[in-house]
Amino acid sequence: MWNPKATERGNSRSVIRELFAYGETLRRTAGEDAVADLSLGNPATPPPPAVTEAFRTLLATEDPLTLHGYTAAEGDPVVRASIAAALSRRYATEIGAEHLFLTAGAAPALTAVFFALTEAPGDEFIALAPYFPEYSVFATVAGGVLRVCPCDPVTLLPDTDALASLIGERTRGVIVNSPNNPSGVVYDRVTLARIAACLTARSREIGHSIYLISDEPYRELVYGAAEVPYVPSLYPETVVCYSFSKSYSLPGDRIGYVLTPPTCPRAAELLRAVAGAARTLGHVCAPALMQRVVGAVPDARPDIAFYDRNRRALMQALSDLGYAYVTPEGAFYLLLRAPGGDAVAFSDRAKREGLLIVPCDGFGLPGFVRLAYCVAPAVIRRAVTILERIRQDLQ
Ligand code: PLP
Image (cartoon, rainbow, N blue to C red; front, side, top):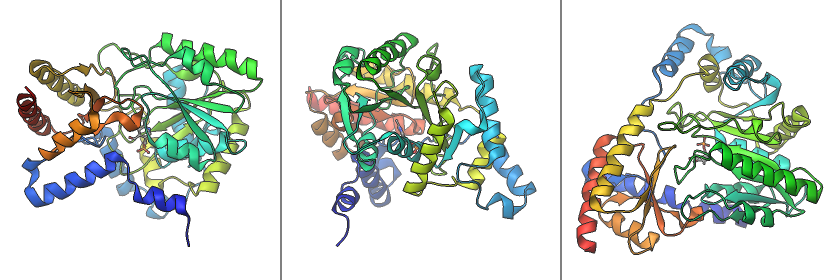
């Protein structure tokens, strides 16, 4: 009749999407105040002013035929050159337009990279727990298999001994996501260097490259002194998958890129494989208007103070209420240790009160729930009121 795997995936929405859809219905039937939706990473702060201004200017001044027309499959060369120049300035390196393939966000970037790196069905990719659950879909679609490397239970950083033992003949790539969804942990230079040393040693032993796939939608979202190193400077065979969704507050408008940096041996050839994979998957010509917008303001930055205020308010309230949580250094997610240890039960309990938080079992981290604090401050206040009520009930 039709593809049973596709049907299965269509029927089984992610837990996050499930909660978000539930929240939308509740909002419609019971009103805005009945819901505190901390399920989805959907920024409730507008795009940086420079981004909004770029939209206006482009719409007012550009020929609409060019503005909305097809671009080259890999993206407009002028836009790619502009992003490449911005990255080169930022990382003191020499990235060119030929190293970039523009995509409709990080999801198609990752899908294309998994697909390009899979040589034969059954090839393996390793995600470092806790990890974005869609990696498993992306790897499977490419014909690959996703394996999961556990993390240290306290720091939530990857266990590199476990990583070394998971790497085998079939390993094609390891995915790093820092700042991390769902933990908010930022991998420091030492951690990345440890991962790099592990991959270098193991690729020598197994006799072929292991790529580091750096998934970076939250690169710009860091608090305090946390540093997000440029990963290719620590491990040359890195492919970067970037998204403007979170940093430019426009996740619905879909724009991002794959970068095969010049540090990567045969970087241009690898980019052609990514282009071929994207073509196979139907991901060509990222939205043209969005390409022009990010090309016009490649250095725009998010309003980090907005997220930081929410982060601090939430942490203070959780401490006051006696909840255990992980202090986030980046992204806009906070991990709460589920009282009683059952994250699904705790998420269900919260859902009955209208608080939507995501159990992290599917992220490879049972026992925790994820709170997306990229919401309006009033939603944080509502969430705290509900958490207070639940806490009283639990005592
Ligand atoms: N990777 C991670 C870690 C994410 O959290 C997300 C989205 O939340 C994505 C990739 C997908 O990003 P995009 O919306 O740009 O496709």
